[in-house]
Image (cartoon, rainbow, N blue to C red; front, side, top):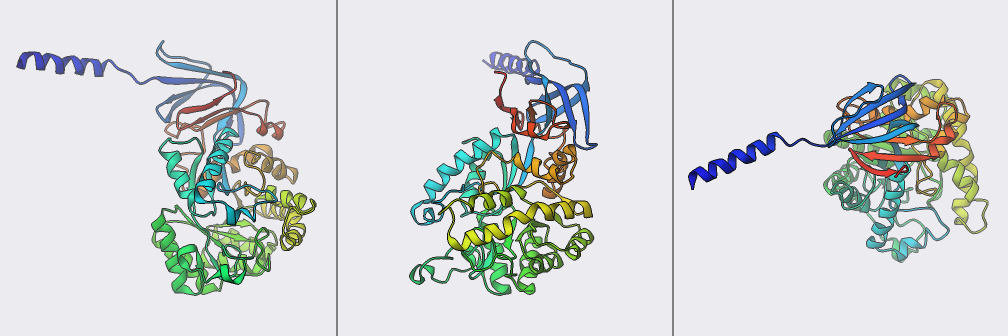
Length: 430
């Protein structure tokens, strides 16, 4: 009996030694080198498990047990990264009434659809900047391979003062307003600020988002005025720093941006009325700028549709929306650090590629725009050692598009291949 057991163990050991993980050889006609903003020709990308093993010149393949993916007619690049999305919702004239009719389960099922659509558009990683908290469960479900979607870094529920842009009871009658507090991201004073951050961390947030000024799509009174006192912003940022996480600031008005930058904010979102003084402050402090031009362009167009927005929202959309592209142009040319973000959900998920068009229209070179959605986005996340470039040891987040984006940025709409973490989710050739 003992001899049979030993033989069995030996046989298993031989079997394990002789078993090899399948490798995938991707033959890429063109490859975007986002570190150097250049285009490489005829490369083989070797993938094993969830990592890139090597990238070599020419086309190579392995043994019969290995897989070859032929992308010789396409342009290959790292998976795209959108640093400002809202996965729980999507624009529509009924969006405001849905606050009262949708249950968490409704939000979750909708979010699953939006997540898959985002991934299929070539965005393998996103930063979700504010929802109900369902976005945390969405992230977990994707990580557990229960549903298809991008890798999500989420802020959970945004933090605002009472009556601010992210106060969930704005626009309700008094009997429904109540007095929401830090548990739902509504604060007044330093103590509330610290509690709100800690509560989001407890719920599982990867980062924190504040609404440093009013916004466009809430029925709060003003879209540009600052909404936090300096001590409140400082308390949020310091508490988040103690947990080792970043803070992003929604901001349209300049004074709110300056308070956020002074407090040590990691990124400014939208930045509509940003002045040169604020740009200089951001450069000095290394603050990131995520412009979301697509959101501005979209809300300005939707505001023209009768009844699409609440009257208070319509006025703000018409005034603020058209300005963002011009602000981006000034900030980019001033040398402010830029990462790609769209505010998807304010417009239909899956149309994130539009941001590339708006960025390049005002002077950003095509490959640099792609760099902002890959390497630069990874740097914003603090994950540049894991993703954002096609190099040995990086996560195998790889996409391919028809055409040459260096010559025509509009081809970013035509994503034919999506691999996330070594798993193929889309292959237009099959």
